[in-house]
Image 1 (spheres, rainbow, N blue to C red):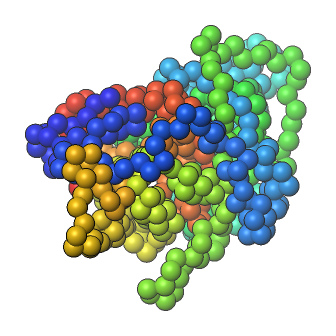
Image 2 (cartoon, rainbow, N blue to C red):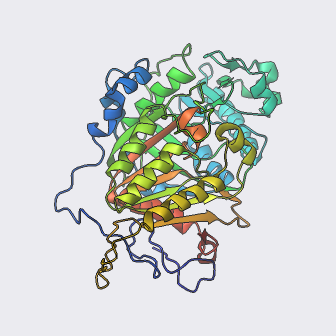
Image 3 (tube, rainbow, N blue to C red):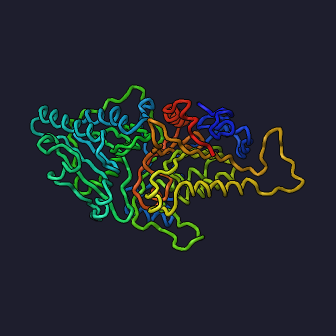
Length: 484
């Protein structure tokens, strides 16, 4: 994998190891790995990862969810072709992956996004819907293609006056054009329903996923919007798809259940599909943001949702490395957990943005990423420079740091012509597990928004997905990451 040279001139003091790499800064030796290499490693994704859901708080939090009585239902095999993992702008991903998948639908499309905006992506989606309508109507004559378009945020006014009903708001045909959709007469071959769901004050439905014929799912990071941000999309098939359908029913389709006909042709995936251990990670929304009104008090615990519990569990079990690629970093539990991992000798790398959605961060978090990064670095500095006994002599030859403090690297993404920000939400742990989905490492995702992610175990998966992310940058763009 690519690494930065000592003379890159962008504030990078030596080399940085990305997932799968082994290089460290030339100005600071790597922390020792207390546990060393284990000849036989236990799987990281197991029922133990979900123990937080069976605690008293976890049971109370999840009791009304479809996984509440049996968290093991969240563990499901998933099949994917890693070559189909794509990185690019939202328009790139819609053009190359999402819209062709929609075109292949035989009976049903469940389309979920967070932010809906007039954009080139929306225009292309409209053209696809019209083509699907005409094709399906001509081929079947009577039956219609079932299409459900779901979103949460469209504008500030829409959110301020949105119903807080769990059923959301279903747009009548007379208002489809106001969303930028085609006229109803151009969509006669579709059984189309358009719904929005938002709960004041901050509970946005943040997941993005598309289910095709209940046989495959696309998990993009991008909204249906105009931003030129770095995004990604992972296609999946297999038993994991059933959990996406169940999640859709519980959130968007409570009164909209329908069985697909048995004549549905099976999806023929790539011949190089591989099966992986996967955990489905929903995180329901919460109206109470749990703000601490008194200054200098400890942060309120985050709701023990599957997504939150899994990330904290993986961070606590990390032995070698944690790598985060996140749009923002304002979640107190995440920062605290990273510091705890650093204290155990785990190396931590964070890549995030400057000045991204400042107003939203202040409203939902009371702070911004830059302040939280400064606090993280300050606390890390104190941890790294605790005084040692006067007679202490370090092991210069092996580079062992007696404090056993991991190496912290934080980098701000520097905007480019093609990508103004990075919007990918990706965490890797020990190069063995990767977490992808909608959840940011910010306070909103951890306390109020509905989120959805998956964790996948496999060194090859981590390597190939990160390779695709890294490969989306040219060498000079990677040097545009400003490492602090």
